[in-house]
Image (cartoon, rainbow, N blue to C red; front, side, top):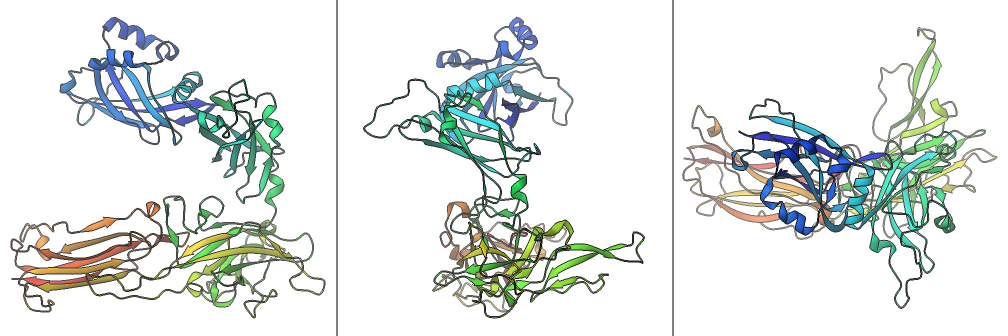
Amino acid sequence: MRYTFTGELYGTQCEQTRPISEGTVKLYRHDQEARATHSVAARTAETFAILDEKQIESKADRLLATGEIESDGSFSVTLDEEQDYDGEAFDVDVVLSSVGGEQGETVHATITTVQPRWYKGEEGPVASWEHQLPQKNWCAILEELGVWVVCGRVIDCESEKPVTDATVSVTDRDIVQDDTLGSATTDADGEYCIYYRVADFERIPFGLAPVELTPGPDLYFEVRGPSGTVLLDEDPSMGREKGRENVGPCACVDLCVDFEGDRDRPLFTHVGRFNVFQDVAANGTLVRSRNGLGGPGWGFFGHVPLEGYVPAADSGQTYYRFLYEVPGESPKPVVGDQLDRTTVGGKLVPDPSSPTGLAWQEIHVAGSAGSPDPGLDPAPKTVVPTAGSRNDDENGWIPVDPDAHGGGYGHGPLLELDTTEIVPGSAQTATPGSGPSSPASGEQVTVYFETTTEAPGGGPDTSAIDRQADAVTLYVNNHPEVRELAIFDGNGAEIGCSPADGVTVKYTADHEFLTSWGLSVSSPAEKPSVHGWSAPSLSGQNIDRGSNAPGTARGVARTESLNVDSWPSCTYEIQLSTRRALTNGRDPDDPDSTPGIDGMFYKP
């Protein structure tokens, strides 16, 4: 009989529950039934044990099955006739060699004993189990691994609300030199966890002897908000305070910052879904995915939304603008065709026909593309950026409507940037089966965000421009893929309308950000009622852009001969499809908008 045991494992750290991952679950049979009965009734504290080599070897003949632990802490183990298992209790062990991405010594620990409650499943009995290791036991595993951790929560001092998407960095205060231990981003509850190794705080400069007699790091912190603003910058002397000095493998430190006071200030924070301070590398490519979009090594293309927040001024007028800079040139304001019509906010206006006496009026920034819905009532208010020379400090400024809902624009697009006006793309060709002579590359575009208020004489005050300290660089590529395909017969002639006598395919797929390509065949012969023929798998590849810098691992240029002797007499289509690792911040490159190219042949 087949038994399927699934579970989830968690460790407790500073009242936080986090999945245990990066390891293996091992199920062991008991050597005595009496011991099993006692162990099932025992508390976890009585059954938990870290095993040495001799203890591991002594139970090797009782191993039932193993299973890998997924990143969310889940695992699945199957037991069947081979193990001579019949539903009885077993020991659950876990084997770990890394935690939080930090590699350590391999640890084998017995967690507890479980008597599963089996239920009838489609393929045999199934049982599910969830277990949370107490902090004492989880920290014992971490100490044995040589991986230490500091966890806590970041809140606003005044409101006591959690601060999300903040970057927490921790440093060890030493007499000779301070050691950076690591950083982490707070989650929706303001919680963070930073893992580090013993070696990270035991580093000793060459030629010096250790001077601290008590082991353990002495911690002090820096916290930066989602915009990169420093919210907390502790003095190194904090590492000598009670609760911070010589902490153990599991330290708990909560932090409070003045975050509410940082909220009502102009900020450029996102390109679509991507946080410009956390998600974009120095070379302009992404370092991670967000909400299933993008991924390490991806670039940007098309029309990208630049998002953030600009409050209305307490008095007078607030203005903001974006500038762009390409290598070898000076920054220029974004104006004219470089921006699309963008909905930046709205406000309530009187409307006698409405049951409430009010209506919502959208506020748009005028741009070259897009028009307001003619059915909108009331019609949107259009804000026109100051225009003129793209190098003029008087231009590209967008005024903030003081009556906008929320007192400003933002927490959404402040401007839609048409990158094709800055880094245009053009189609390239190549001979099928060989690469392009000079593959097209994109460019790094650095984006700046500036604000100002109204000058005494009216208009933006160019003597009081406030530029956001951190600019963001986007790697932009608007070139389409190079895709070439040709089909030849056995005589080397390109196939036209004549029947094929042997088939040779020559094809090329190339792009700086190519993430996949595939060659496929389709035919009416696939209908089971006609021939019962199934299309064979041809060639293809997925390219890991996170492991390959732009311009490397570009694609393929190849010649292939197809053996079609056994294929039914029919018409066949060969298609070459590609996908680019590009995003506009909201959507990925859509293969439907760049359909594959194809060729036809008839096999008599």
